[in-house]
Image 1 (tube, rainbow, N blue to C red):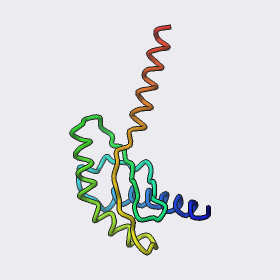
Image 2 (spheres, rainbow, N blue to C red):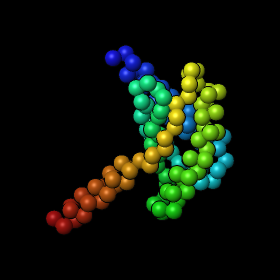
Image 3 (cartoon, helix red, strand yellow):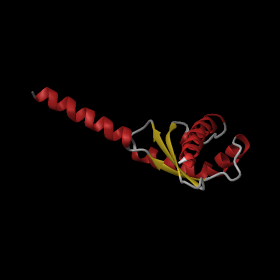
Image 4 (cartoon, rainbow, N blue to C red):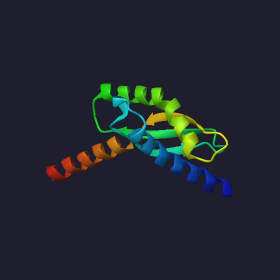
Length: 117
C-alpha cells in the first residue's frame, strides 16, 4: 500500500519536470504548444505513460507533436536523470490526452440541447 503513494509522487514529479523541460530545454517547434496533463507510472516505476494535450485541433499538428515528443525522449530522459534522484529513469510513452476534447464535445452537446428547449 505504501508503494502506491511513492508511485503517485514520482508520477507527479515527472509531470512537473517534463513540463519544465519542454518549456526550457527542448527547442523543437513541434512541441512548443504541448502541455503534459497526467503521468501514470507502472507499479515498478520502469515506465511512465505521459499524457499530453496540444493547443491545436489540426490532425497534422497532433502528429507533428507526437513525432516531436518521440524525438525529444532522449533529451527529456537525460534531463530527468539530472533533476530526479532515481536509480533508473522510467521509459517514457507519450499518449495524446483525449479527455479535454471529449469534455468540450459534451459541453457543446449540452449547450445545443439547452438551446432546443
